Amino acid sequence: MTTPTHASDALTATAGARSPSPQAPRAGLYTPEERARRDTTKWTLVQGILAPVQFLVMAVSVWLVLRYLQTGEGLAAANISVVVKTFVLYTIMVTGAIWEKVVFGKYLFADAFFWEDVVSMGVIALHTAYLAGLALAWPPRTLMVLALVAYGTYAVNAIQFVLKLRAARLQEAESLRRVATA
Image 1 (cartoon, rainbow, N blue to C red):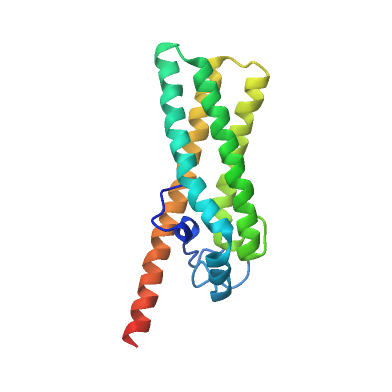
Image 2 (cartoon, rainbow, N blue to C red):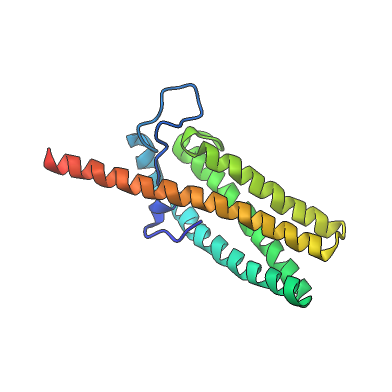
């Protein structure tokens, strides 16, 4: 959902002590075994590529949607852009679920990505509602506002990942520093 500097960074982060399960809190996002699976699966690279692609598609779509709302022109282009964004979202969600299964053993709601997955479900619901509204011929302005709400929710989800990424990088750097000074 952001442009990672390294493919494995697309999903690297820390869960900290806010684990949603009743189990003991995780010290970090990955156990050594999970990190090894993350680093060897092709799905990490797929996620690392799809995240910035989805963001770029959304940026173009936001521009087209806002242009339609301001001028009344370009409805077809705006609709197509939202549909494309929705299918890119579905693709990243399916491949992300596969990635999560490979790394954590669960298709969704692994402790490390629980809240990101929860918000992602809302993002998917809003995008799917847009498709339903398009099929049911809802008023164009209603559809465009719904698209912007979906994109705002997506932005919240992206921020979740960015913050987790940053925390993970800091934690990994600290771990490497401790090993180097030990």
